[in-house]
Image (cartoon, rainbow, N blue to C red; front, side):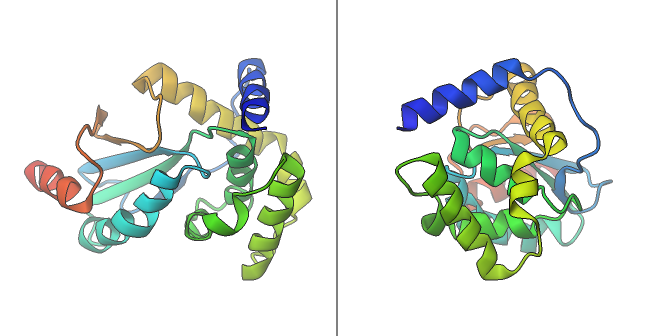
Length: 192
């Protein structure tokens, strides 16, 4: 089933042609910070969820909240379930990361199922737990959001040769170390 979903997703990606600037990227931190981090991630990726649970909170406390670092979360969905979850993460179109973090923190509740319909139902149930006040079906059908997500994925491959998630880009350079807060902190402190 995953192979079928992945093939379907790849066909959608290949047919993508336009980029929509209507959708705000999900960002946090001071836009004028010296250090800019881009994270390419897929919402069904367990390593990405690990980053959000175990690395991001310390990164936020030590570098983002004090204005040293800004972070942008870019879409690199690896399958249709991640693609649909990304649509939900962008649905409010406010650039906030609240839904994104919620989905990663609850990945074990929604990222399971025998087919895309079951995955979508689990995603809907999980989103309804928090009462985000979004129109789930409208979000899944939103072409502007879809174009934004596919554009992130295509541009990630073209500009940074992204082929796995999560991939961290710091000031336009790939972070090649093991993705732990300790390694990230050491790398960032050299840049300050």
